[in-house]
Amino acid sequence: MRSSPPVRKAVFPVAGLGTRFLPATKAIPKEMLPVVDKPLIQYAVEEAIEAGVDTLIMVTRGDKQAISDHFNRSGHLEEFLEQRGKAELLQDMRDILPPGIKLREAIQAEPLGLGHAVLCAQEWVGDEAFAVLLPDDMVKTRGQGCLAAMVDAFGATGVSQVGVEEIAPVDCRRYGVAAVERTKEGAERITEIVEKPEPEAAPSNLGVVGRYVFTGEIFQHLSKIGAGAGGEIQLTDAIARLMMAQPVHAFRLNGKRYDCGSRFGLLAAQLDYAMDIEELAEPLRAAMSELMKRHGGA
Image 1 (cartoon, rainbow, N blue to C red):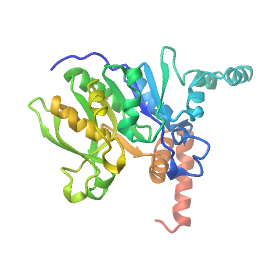
Image 2: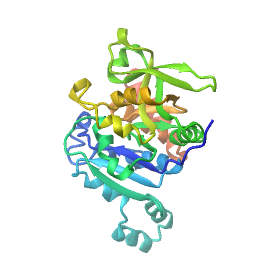
Image 3: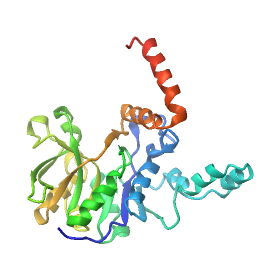
Image 4: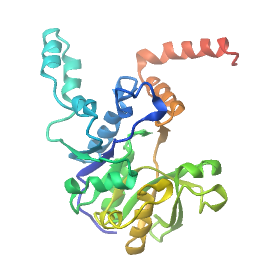
């Protein structure tokens, strides 16, 4: 086991068009869609900050002003809340971006894939270890957050960590898929990784999901690979190259993941998170029971 420098920077690829949610995302980024009373991007940022990150790098098209507006202070709103005596809500607004946390922006001028989006952040990351979080993937945990656990694993081993979970064979076409072998220390080393294989060609049932911790060497490989599946620069292809130079471990998510890039996933996350709020839980149960009766459910 080895001790590695802390992970202080996190990259958030947020340049997508959000076409699955049109027309809702015509004027606002999909990362600003709410789950109860916070947008998706805020949940991802909070997870990163809990893991010790102090620099947030948003990779955007440059026209998603709503994201930076959300994290910037609003003097007018804070003054209004203060005048109305809404101290708790005022503190919530000030805590959206806690003191000492830096927000940076990198521009992805063309939609050339996730790998390209990560590469666009290199100017802010440098050669440090860093995290990547896809806000679409919400990971709800009890206790330590998913990224914090991955950062701990990286800190103990110095080995890049790739988030995975078991998926149905039919879903392999939508994911990178990784095969693993158990190390003597009990970790799972990735031995093969393939982007969006056909089910019969998939090396396992472990799908790669939106949490990563990388050594800085990943940039060397991202800068050298060309277009892969779908004509895009695939992060999976760069991971495959990184594996030839150093080990990469699979990290099984320590929570429930919601694919909030889909309508069903976003709705399911809404319900799960709302049930944790006391004043919403009981009315929601009653409403769901009524809906089930009205639509012919049990």
